[in-house]
Image (tube, rainbow, N blue to C red; front, side):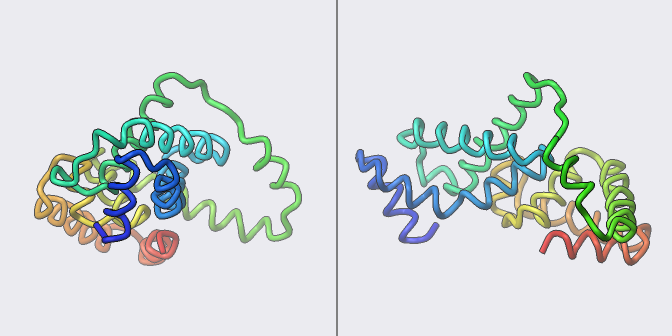
Length: 187
């Protein structure tokens, strides 16, 4: 945790409402991306990002730096928010994406990329939930092993081993361009 982050947390816990804006600015894109990857829907991700930060603001007084990283605490709130939303929501159709699909020029190229992405997703779906979650958090969300450890309840070493084994397996089993596509999309 950086000095700037620690100071903002302390000020916020002491009643400085504006200090939360600094924390929001530090994490809003990361939390949005984290949620968007799990929901696949822009407006749902925006709504759940807002809910996540509202919950964080309301509960900032419960955060204790001695018990873990602020980012891990925030990602845990986001993860629980996504889970709660999945339990209570009905499937939706992204009308904006459907409308934009007609306006695209390179339909064949996009279809090929979509097909490859579908293959990567199918591969990821074959992994255990634990493996998939660690790979996604590491590659897509760009979380550190410490943050992944705090979110999953596993040791950092265990998270590293799981990630390493999955990547080795992917290198052997996944067509090289698909692995490249997966890695390219996460950067």
